[in-house]
Amino acid sequence: MRRLWLIFAQPVTVAIAVLFVVKTLKPEWLSHLPAASGGGVFEVATVVEAPAGSEIYRPGSHAEAAKKAIPAVVHIFTSQEVKGPRHPFIDDPIFRHFFGDRFGEQSQRRSGLGSGVVVSPEGYILTNFHVIDGADEIEVAHNDGHKYKARVVGSDPESDLAVLRIPADHKLPVIAFGSSDTLRVGDVVLAIGNPFGVGQTVTAGIVSALGRSHLGINTFENFIQTDAAINPGNSGGALVDANGHLVGINTAIYSQSGGSMGIGFAIPVSLAKSVMEQIVKTGGVTRGWVGIEVQELTPELAESFKLADTSGALIAGVMRGGPADKAGIKPGDVLTQVAGKPVKDAQAMLELIAALEPGKTARFELKREGRAVGVDIIIGKRPKPPKE
Image (cartoon, rainbow, N blue to C red; front, side, top):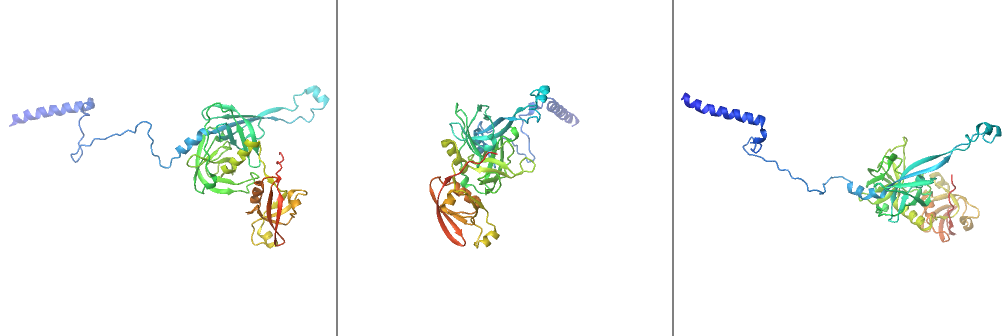
């Protein structure tokens, strides 16, 4: 019996020793053997790799919208010559004898940056007027590295818009126009531009409010407000919807630090497109004008004028010899309708009159001393704002 046990034990011991040595020194020799699970069932992991070029579903991603819009958003670099102050004694002959002209009027170049949006294959670019204001050299850089010298086709300081043009020497990427009129508060939007000159940047947010005005930024204000981060250098860049379509031109921010605080403003594409089309066609923007000064109707003023509410605009002054003066409009009148459209407030009145065609006649409805009055006015051409 003892002999049989030794015959059995010795081979088993040798086999275990060999298995231990092989597992320690050459484990790959055993890799083909399946591993046993606790329940006696062998499991083999299956790895499935996605085919090359296939799309991966990413919930909440705006990559496709950004991909469509980014190529059409450009960087704008400007420079201008700025003359320094003259020394107060530079005209004194004795001073000039000792010091010459070294303290005379000196100049230096000042640079700026912003963004723009290519809106047509012919090379037209929409941007903000304040981006190119005063510049004597403008360079446009595409995200693909192409650089161009740009010229100003025209500008409109009152809406803070300008149109540039670059040579269309190759197929330019062009953005698709969306509809700012169908935007809703809460819609997702992306802001694309060149903040602080760091390079092409996309930020995401929502439409925070619509129709923002009375901000003191432009003469004509109807801003889209968004919390998508907009910073210096983003001005003139694109605000796009979730489809990558242009819905606004990023223009301004509310900030106490100089950077984004989640309150940014963009010019609606409906206004930007209208201004652009006029500039391309005529080199400028023509607006209606009647020569009146207005002020907001407060509840106190409405009560004193015996008005039911504060809708309308109080005429505070009439320019002598202007269209309104010739039609018989007087200070103290309250304007309620322009060409059949109700006047909500002073800002709305300004926009309604500006939209009228100079030379045409329009009907103005007023309230004067508690009674309704209607007058016909031949619309004049709005004068250009004085340069600051």
